[in-house]
Amino acid sequence: MRYLKATAQGRSCHGRADTVTLQFFQHHADCPDEMIHAFISEDTTADGEVDFLRPGDLDPDAHLEAPDLDKRQLGAFANSFLKLNWFNSAVHSQRSLVLYVDHFGKTGRPNAVKLDFFESSAPGGKASLIYKAAAYDGDRDGVLESFTNSDVDRNGVANSTDKELIRSLCTAFLALAWYEQ
Image (tube, rainbow, N blue to C red; front, side):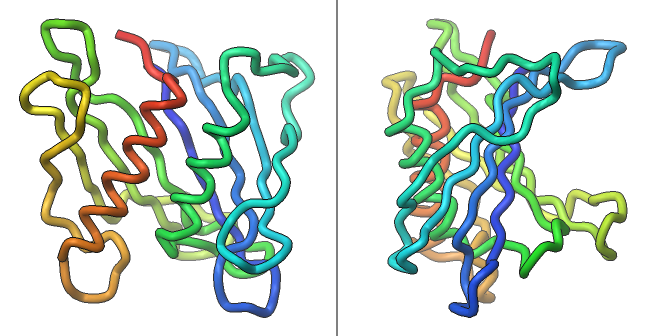
């Protein structure tokens, strides 16, 4: 199974995320998960859109290039993630989001994308799953049209804004094609 772990940092004084780290993992049964690719994107102008995207620090044994990942699609995902408002302040890394395809339809297309929200209670502590959301393609047409009733922006109400955030993140994730059946 492949999954994407996204982490956002608010390093500036604007009170919102400005840096997104994307880590692409391959899960192996009975072995530690392997990070295949990593990218860091930055919003230096505080306009909510990433301005720079560069490869992140990787294990020396990891793949240094990502020919299978399109930089525009990486930027689109990072921009969607910035809108989520699920970020860490300064240098802390307590919050992260993991996305993965949970189910495939008979045609082989993904028809369920899961979002797992993790948070640790202390800097450097083990992260716990605290929240879940999902998007579904019920009619197998390649369009996500059904969403969990989740308050992903954590404003106290699950509404159309939350569904649009889920749609945006899951659609951008699927465009990266970081999944395998």
